Image (cartoon, rainbow over all chains, first blue to last red; front, side, top):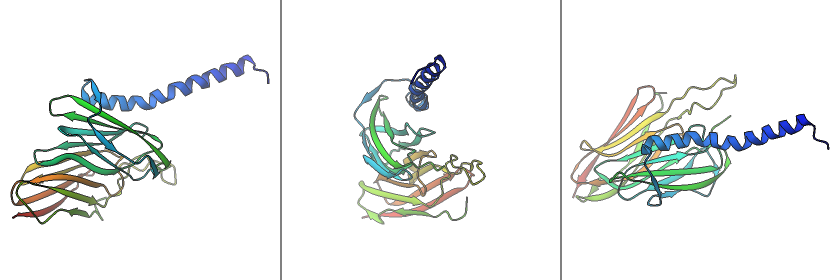
Length: 138
Length: 109
C-alpha cells in the first residue's frame, strides 16, 4: 500500500490525538488532587487502599481506605468522567481512620487515595482495578 | 427522589466506655449520576446524596463528601469510639434538599 501525503497527515494526526488523549483524561484528576493538597508534595505510602484486582461489575466495586493519623482521605477514580469519588473527614470520635464503601468505575483504571495527615503532610496510594463491565451506563 | 428512601444502620446497642465499635450504614437511593441517558438520548439529571455525617452526642465521628461515583444504595462502614452512653445520629443530605435522619441509642456498661 502506498502512502499518499494525505494518508500520512491523517495518520500523524491520529497518532498525536492518541498520545494527547490520556493526558486530557488525567488532567481533571490532577486538578482534583491539587485542589485537595493545595499543591503540596504527596508522599507514596502511608495509606492503605484495598480494592479488588478485577471487578466484574463496575457499578459496585467495594473499596476500603485507611491511614493512621489522617484527618481526611480523598478517593479518586482517575478514569471516570468525573474523577471525584468521596472525601472522608474523620471527626474526634472516629475509632480509626478507616472507611469502606462501594463505588462506580467507568472502566479499567487507577483508583487513588490521598490522605491528609494531622500534621499537614499528604500521602498517597494507587491501585489498578480491571473492570469487565463499566459502571456509567450508556 | 424523596420517596422510597430508607436508611438502615447497624450499630451495637451497648458498648464499654471508650470501646471502638464498627458501624455499618446503608441507604436506599438511586444515586443518578448525571452521566446516563434515557431512550430519547437526553441526559437524566444528576440526583444523588452528596453528604453523609455521623455524630455521637453532637461530636463528629465521620463526615463524608459524596460524588456521583458512589454506587446505588450508598453503603458505608467505619469505626467509632463510644466515650459514654448517648445517641448516635446519622444524617444524609440529598441533592434536592431532603435530609434523611436516623438515630441509634448506645448504652454503656
